[in-house]
Amino acid sequence: MTPPAPVSLTAIPGIPDIQPGDDLATILATALEGAGLALADGDILCVAQKVVSKAEGCLIPYDSVTPSDRALQLAQELNKDPRKVEVVLRETRRILRAWRAPGAPEGVMICEHRLGFISANAGVDESNLGQRDAALTLPADPDASCRRLADALAAHFGARIGVVMTDTFGRPWRMGQVNVAIGLAGVPATIREQGNHDAWGRPLQVTEPALADEIAAASGLVVRKNARTPLVLLRGLDWRPDPASRATDIIRKQQEDQFR
Amino acid sequence: MTPPAPVSLTAIPGIPDIQPGDDLATILATALEGAGLALADGDILCVAQKVVSKAEGCLIPYDSVTPSDRALQLAQELNKDPRKVEVVLRETRRILRAWRAPGAPEGVMICEHRLGFISANAGVDESNLGQRDAALTLPADPDASCRRLADALAAHFGARIGVVMTDTFGRPWRMGQVNVAIGLAGVPATIREQGNHDAWGRPLQVTEPALADEIAAASGLVVRKNARTPLVLLRGLDWRPDPASRATDIIRKQQEDQFR
Figure 1 (cartoon, one colour):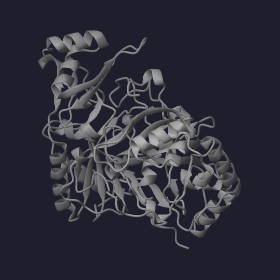
Figure 2 (spheres, rainbow over the protein chains, first blue to last red):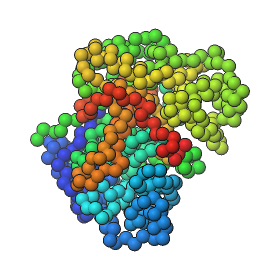
Figure 3 (cartoon, rainbow over the protein chains, first blue to last red):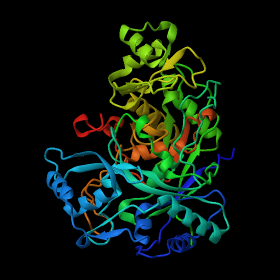
Figure 4 (cartoon, rainbow over the protein chains, first blue to last red):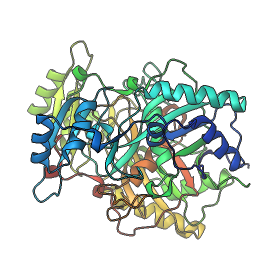
């Protein structure tokens, strides 16, 4: 018997260090073609937030940052760089928790980002920047960034594709980090199965697979931080495009969330 | 140029409804061979908790359950079946939250399972059981179940493999559910990258990819609840076996967790 068709995940090599103003869609298309790959209908590209932020000029040199009094106070409590704290605060709607564990060299800030995502440091990152005295924020509008990439790559390859922008988040209760979706074009945030039935006819009450986060987490399997592989091609997935999908659809409303 | 080798995810068809006492390893081996697949070194099998629980006889008929006073009280507050609540309480070390949203037909219990996992209803499930007046609990020792499956399948195919037992969990802050790892054989819970450096030489402070959960989430892409596909083959992943891995290594210690 022929084995069932698999879903495949491929890390695309050959993407250079990204600079502000770079035409990311063309760079990604070149990397795909350099790897012998042409996009086809139904393909989904996972793009790491970091390269999008870099192309969009979201790098903030610390010598341009003057910490507020609140940033100075938090930085002292948490033993963090006050300029980083200031950048985090500018991206933050609300701090859920800020604490420093006994013996930890540095504290943690769990923040609700201005777009609603909840993560450490509101997505502000200092690693893999190529310079030490700067921080990188999330793109201004990750869904719009994904839409631009999807449109440009769809035109380039003549194929209907989806794009998922990923970032790496920790989570409560479970160790380690997983990639999650923070921007979407075409790919639904979740699949609403309410009203469907299980294999024995029992109604599925609350089943709603978080498709975009499953895709993002899967992309993490082939991307490692020290390998400069910010682009993953997911091929063979059975999915239905949703032209109106937005990553913020993934965010649980505060009044439905008992863990804020 | 030859495209880079992908990681592939294949849902294995042809697995029958599982009965208590079934030899699950032989059933899975038969399904793999029926799909034209032989396991090879480095393959990872994702097995849905439900079939393991069924094979191990974790189905509890409600006519055998007498709800305690506490179960009766909670059931009334949450509009749940007191027999289900009783089964949940027997699996639960601690209830983190129990609430019924205004207008919701039924309430939610977020529980710390006796093994430490935090999820709705302590992993007790009523769907896809093939009978309506019963509930299915997690296996007694999911890591041991995975180890038995891994040993039997490794012997059958003459290959070193890993096994991940998956369950479907909701999570705070983000909508929908993702598959997570609740049992492991060979596959590390996380990859400790502390002490490594990013691509530009900056030390990675807290990077610890949750490998087992990434694998579990990826398996969700090819498994849909109404399709009876409890087995997924992950092939082509670059990973290092850890003979001592345990799914409970994924659980964040209470004193390090600000969201309990």
